[in-house]
Length: 393
Ligand code: DNO
Image (cartoon, rainbow, N blue to C red):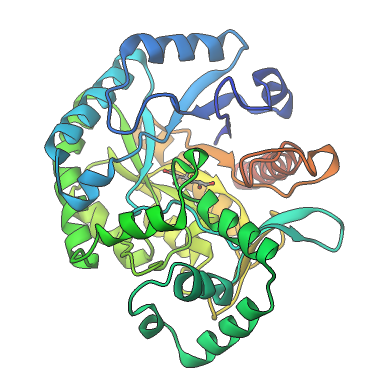
């Protein structure tokens, strides 16, 4: 696998030089300064590429070219935004960047209820508790009919928990939820959030899927021409939130998306943590089934239960059999090599990592620690080498 690292650009507190010292050779980044929906100009792409290469690294993957909300809703200027998206893909291909990660989650990107969950060893991870999320939906957002979406027992527990909070705790909790919104730096208010959610009224999972398929039918031919492999990122977590539909959550969703536009340029990001938060997803099996269409991998583990609670965990702990996932990826690379595919090395990155050592207390994008991710990468490297040796000898 190609070992990569997500870097948030020049503002990231982790430098390209530090990333090089972790052993990663590829960078995963985006032009975060370009407003959502606008074309990424050739010059800006080239300048960023040169900056990365000046440190001896390669810009391997774009994460993400964001999909404008109007495309997901098929409202307003959505056709114009699709045209801009195509232009961005052509520009990226021209400059030699061949993998693009994106997602199709309405309004929210990832969601957690605790960004500093304490491990017994003193490190911190990201956590999601369903009853806390429900409390946000019913008692803070006060979404119409929200209580119809949850079992009475969960609502009771969630109310008890909510009533135990003081005002400061409520504010911290609201900030935590809002962090998962793209553009959260501009700090959404609860009222704004309610408004953007309201704009999805009448869009259920079937409609959203239609909109995704339309988008794919438009962009994949362009991606093919530009030699860009698209990698749709799963929903995190893989179930509907705040009444908003989600359509990249399960094995069946992936199957439908890949069959709809049958092209290697229409692939997925195998995010083991996002799919894996759902007890219903079998990650080794999904890796095997969709192997030829995995264009990018995010590797991390989670501990989860059937009540939709989970927290992020160390690479070899948690509920996902990471050995089998990595083994299936290595076997796929061997198949690609034999069949002469040019993309025989699958780019992967250690996804989130616990906050530990000097990382604790430092401002960071939730999950994007230095030491925790470095530990994850070291473990993945070792595992991969061991598997490769055991397969070829
Ligand atoms: C969070 C990430 C997501 C993901 C995007 C992909 O840590 O998994 O932000 O990168 O949703 O478009």
